[in-house]
Length: 411
Image (cartoon, rainbow, N blue to C red; front, side, top):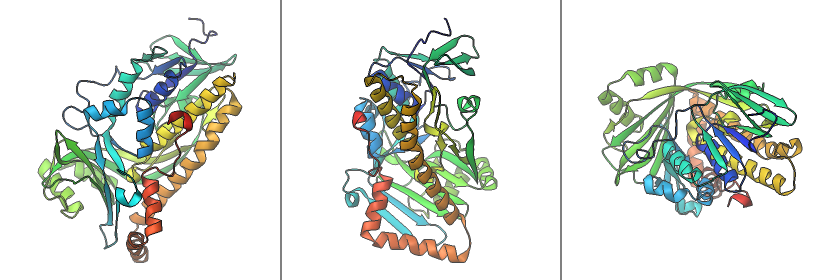
């Protein structure tokens, strides 16, 4: 292959949920795409959403649902496993403050769906197989990035080079491509570690997403329904490193007892169905989303604390906006790497994402404090929100993604 000859219009590095969704959006418009990922191959389509729950789940808003419907993948996901939730309960485990939300109050059929990440990716990969303009490269690691003669050149560790006017980094929070491009990040250590696992509870979850703010951090019980059994939940406990180490080392019985106590016994006895694993939580925000021939999306651009479950939704909105801008540029005869046009994407997304990152950090600090005055204030605040209809509706619309606007080209 001659490095000077662009062999595709766009190269996307990272075949997770965000990168694969972008490949689908561009591919169904006839854009020539190379999708590159280090993993050995596609998701195991025979097992995704068929047996035990995957530890990694996302709380997808109705806006994200509409994007996936437009790609023709939502029905495929439903054939595997998606769990709607109609209610949310949030309370302060250190006090008496509590607020609850319902889809009816928000004027929505559902607040969202809890979906295992491999279910989303398997459905997107099935759609990709129908798009002849998209080619996938698995077991491919990027070793170098150059910009020459209006083209971006990716050198692969395994040998060979891929060339296109535009490269998109969708390769995660520790994005190697972002590092190769020399794009700095604003990095905020949260001082917390996320412990994730799956459990079965004594009582059904009732389509309710639950989150308790405890002394060491928020504990979320996200509803899952497996083979018609609504007594399963995905667990995310954001806590201190010492407590995380303690939780991961517990026997299944002892871990179940701590989880049951953590949510005040609201679901009865809790039994883990998978081992608990942990990973550090760091919020990052790229100082810029684009440079000549390169754009960042999803966690490569911004990684957020999981307490609001907005990470995947923010990434899918990045994808929708970037695809809209690229396809508009294409219709106008502009290069997909046109810097002015890429800057439109950055302007539309970086500000919104920055607001969400600041908001999540403020929540983390407020609910992580043990100062009596702030503890009282947050308890009174939660109780006040539960009584104030307009404010409550505003928060519900934000949580459901309703205040975000899906670009017309992606509806």
